[in-house]
Image (cartoon, rainbow, N blue to C red; front, top):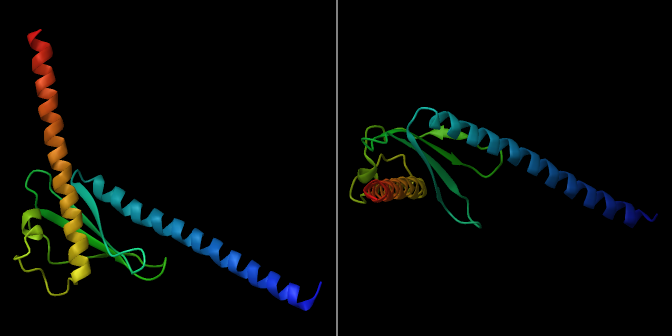
Length: 152
């Protein structure tokens, strides 16, 4: 083998190793993230994940934990960072606010919440409202079909 072949082989092996390491670290980051989401879901509240940003720019993820009856936010966390070592961090100042307040552009948010984080939080809030609308439609359909079967 020529020295040039050895160098090229080492570069390719190094890149492949770095890619595999990145995949492994991404896997553990996903496990931590969804483990935390699972903890929130065990409380009986509605949990939603919102995203802001694009594939080419840094993404921001937000988790909202909302009471299903009152639509009041109990907890919120964010995941933001450039590496697979980024972890969830609490977002303070939203506790006690309703989903509709969060979605209202005129409602002031705490100053430490960036524009991108606000978009991610609002995305999560929209998912919750869509979920609740689907749930109501399903309940109406069930009651209609139950009424039809009971009358026949």
